[in-house]
Length: 417
Length: 148
Image 1 (tube, rainbow over the protein chains, first blue to last red):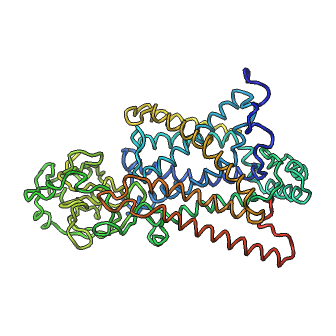
Image 2 (cartoon, one colour):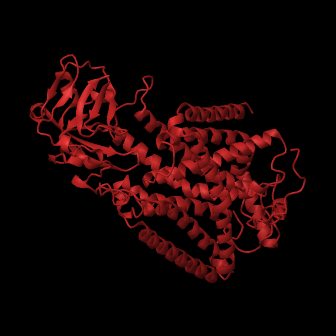
């Protein structure tokens, strides 16, 4: 590139031998990339599912079954995101010397590649950092988290694919068995002879796989390439084991860093938004409460009216966008029985609206596949007791395979879209 | 080659979708704030965290005996990942919110417990691998220094 000095700046990271570890290599980068790419793929896919739940499109209706699908997919989303933190950290460490390669780019194509890597690194770091901050309810930004998280997820997914396309030959070399053997043979030669990695590569087959960013300055013991890989996987495993209990009850005992405990809270189900926080304490306890349903034969229902409809019990999870979930036994009339009583067409999407006047999730659309599902309830009871105020008394929506933010609490009305 | 071009084109399309999502939702994405965060993440990583990690690696090379070094570094990687999760939870003002169900644990204490467990695990592994090395009558390396 014109305008840049031919020699690197006289700064420590640009000097030969600035990065003494000899384990940085295509072998390591490719494997770390594979692990991180797998986590990102699961995270992106499950994130799309969550986005589709919250922004449904008519050409891709989501099924209401299996009832636990969102619980699993969002649990995976958060778990793989958390697991990706150590993987990303080690991957960035493995390629850090490339940041100081000189000249920074030799062509416009190379410059574009470096720019795409910057987008990839910044985007992935952004997704993981803001994701953790969101779990911690630390909102230190000027944007609306779900929208920004979704937009940057596309940037990350796109730049991952672009990176794979550009680096494909190096990835194939790094992952090939022959490359692995060559690296191992080379490294052993280096260890035996006390030589540097360049000599090791010469002892191995060509091309000099595994030496791309190796600077043979440090003969002191350090982790092997496999050791670094084990550390990355170990770090990911430790984060998963200590947090996944919020989604996966058998590991609840190990959840020392879990942001939620599924058994905590009133009626042993966690609460995100309390009745006090939503400002509905008085309205929800008003003796004159009526559930208003619009439709061809629209009418209102008192709690006694709802109790006269067939009562159903359903074991369903509350599955939060934050990854935690808790199953419970809900009871009340089916939404479809209420809709039928008002003559609402079977193919109608309905909108369930809370007594909450403000709030991002004060109302939710219920597509017909969910509204007509036999386990979708206007619940009035939880685990054999009346709903508590914080769980949505007097009536809340509970449906299968649906994010918790769409399980509207303190339901005041149901209308046809 | 065709496959690479297709994958690359899909990637560029994905990046385009991301940019479009930002631009079509200006009120919610706050593009300048978002760009600031993206640049900030790069600066945080490349300008602060990586130099810190390299400095820590330098310190380990000088302080920790050679035979224990690989396992010590493994332990540090594990602890770093745990700290990244625990610290935001520990400092969040949302702790003790009205619901009483969010961030209810003593995360710094739990991180200290986990650090103790990891350190103990590293110490035991160093002892065990050291004994195994002596039994075999060879120099100790906990793992082959540069094999892989």
